[in-house]
Length: 309
Image 1: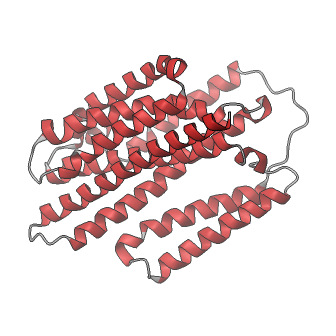
Image 2: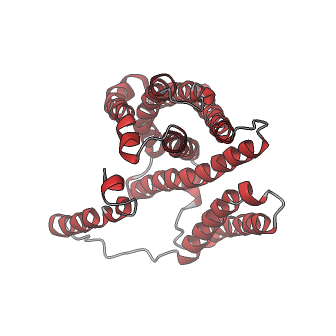
């Protein structure tokens, strides 16, 4: 509704008053910290990891237009490797590291954040391609596209609510594995999307299955990433989850957009719409394979941990 009535920029601007309201409420309701021993900001660590993630995202996003051997892609990826490597060195030598290496050496933290990054990449890219498919191929307006995805949003919400009770009964890893498999099935289905209007069969059906899986894994991933973390590192563990989610979404979208554009360029179809749809289909298929791999990681990690006990 905002995009149709006010323009797409308002999708971003609408967050400004929300953020301002939260700031006012937090200032009024939260007690000030009594901890006088405040740690200094690890500025070198913050700069290197930010530059590394940004360069990696940019480099991958340019592959579709310029190819892996282009100068801008190679330079961006070299900068990414250099900055992320420096980040590791800085964190090992810093007296107050942004991310203490001991946290990253915890198996559940590393596995959980890898899973979160992978799932976030899938979720971000899926919504992106579905929106493009409905508007560019099916000719839907932004409003109609949004309304068409309301059932998916409802299932996502219901899945997140249900996962709370399922988490206490089955544990985090089985839920992540089951959710990943549901997402894989939901994404393998739209890998056959046609270049004509077939909302019920190729949009509604698969998105409901995909949303059921995505809703189930949200809370278990957070629980897995923060399990066994000391109280003083709880904020850091939560921050790592959010960082993995945002970075995974950005890099995953860039990577799958590159897959889609490459598949479109290599399509043998003479119809322009069919070529574009083929690119979307291949990207969805890769996303589905990624979801299956995430489920496999959860299963293998859970089995290994069980054997160690």
